[in-house]
Length: 49
Image 1 (cartoon, one colour):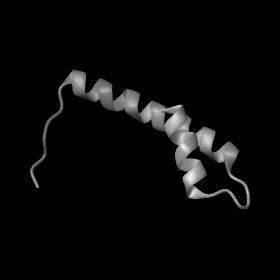
Image 2: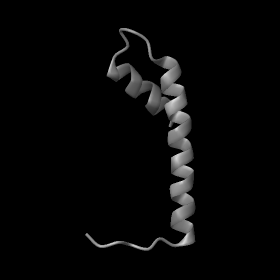
Image 3: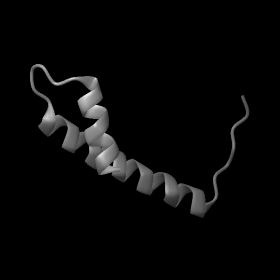
């Protein structure tokens, strides 16, 4: 597998995506409780995104 050098624009998009993912992780952690299904978590994530 070759290494692809990213340009500044691509790196910025990756940074933004990482920030969104980190915030989503916080949202989902707050929703975790016994009995919640992965389908419910998927819906919460989809609504957030």
